[in-house]
Image (cartoon, rainbow, N blue to C red; front, top):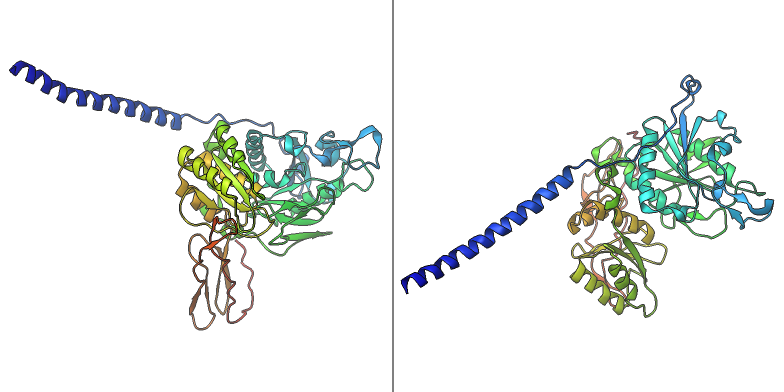
Length: 463
């Protein structure tokens, strides 16, 4: 009897110890794998970027490289019909041939790199990863870069570059609404003006900008607004950064990011040299409409989506069926959601908690790019929320005194304006919660603009 009790006690003691040992071994193995994986060098692509020629080295003009991806700008009219603006083969002409037709010698010494030659919608996210690294590789050699793309997804490509290119040098994205060889084409002028903007160096520290039809836009803010018109690109809430009024490049405002020039805060958290392109996750967009079902969200999750952007009605509202599908995706699969509006403009404020993040005034396509890159670097929702509310939300704070104006980008604090004489502070009121028509919670009202009590003389501050 005593022997049996002793045996039972041994089992009770030994079995838990064996289980703990097994768990420790498994944990150690997983940790080791994680550390090995993190330590493994990322296999980065290489690019045959042309060297600056001896003639260009001897020139006083800036060196600009055109990184070409194709699109309508490099398109050729079908059957030689120069009057048909809609029937053409995109991505036909090599960029070197197109640049050779322009009087660029007046503006810059220009080289070309043919990254690809197809429509913008034909590029995968993995190819955009390569494109961003190619632009950075080119900017190690050249003073600035022009990137030509098709216009269909230009805003997405431009914002991807804005979020990932590490160089502070000018990056100007351009394209065309009409193919190169039809009458009235906008391609040659857009390409020439983009080279002019890049060579001016006036958009250094701006991140990526888009230039078409003589108008310069911030990549974060721009969208295509018409299927055919040449003035299709617009920024619904903010307006242009500047214009090309030949021969001058006029800049009338700067993106908030430029206020961080020369600091570590200027760089985005998305350094592609730190991750493999296979780490780029699937992120989708679900569109809300009258009595929208939840099937799209469920289908995206089944297909492996790690993040989903909802384009909601009004202040980001979604239907009850979409809301139920979203809750299930968060609860059962850990999917991260970003709420945006389908209205074309307006802000969606963040609640500060949960797996649904407010997209501010990013449209759904832009928010998708930011969420995709965020999930490529972390699964931690608070970290992703922080990136959306800081780098993704480009607010500006202005401190005013009697002698100078210093502009800085807001990180986490509420906007504060200090008066020029009294030194008193006025703080914007806290946002209050609201509710959309569909019953979906929506963060509070837009913060009012606070005007200083006196307008001092403006002094230009150059970073």
